Length: 117
Length: 115
Image 1: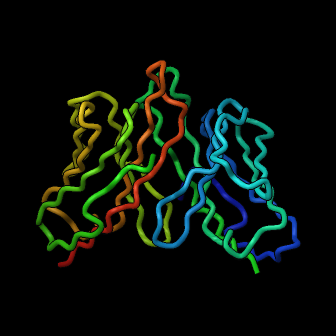
Image 2 (image 1 turned 90 degrees about the vertical axis):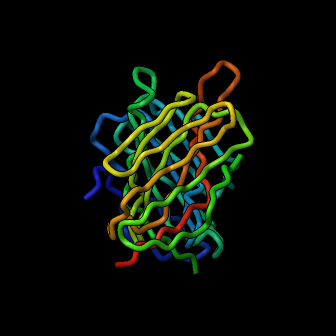
């Protein structure tokens, strides 16, 4: 079991739907991440939140909208997706690197398997 | 910015050793190593920050040559449980010497350990 919980585990949505992915951690981590992973490919960074503020957006299309309501929760809102957006969406968290950069490994959730039809 | 990993795949017998390499064209703040098994999330192995640094984790260790912007992961006396895809992740160093926190993964090395 991982300490980063992602829901739902599987999601099928049409191109006109609006849905949200949820990620939760209770380890006191202050950095949270969204990665997208296609089959047999590496995780691809989408967004980084640091202290609940968006610090990195890797030129992700606006049909993906992240939200960090508090330090434990990270959402990814999805709207008007394309079939090529089908992938495993991984959330990760890490402690703040300010005090100890060695103590900043990413803890991944098990992901949400998204299929866009 | 994506680091380059080699080899793409390795097949070992139990007890054999392997080396996985990771190189970047950018100055690096840190190198991370993760292992991902099929259908599972990536699992953290280790972080290296300082040039010349070597770290060990049981029979898995790594080195970081900051000058060459390269890192290597060493797996000795491999076990069946070592099978999976190994990713290096690199954080580019920014002007002030730190990092923005953008960990970018290489394409991965698929390791298969056979009995």
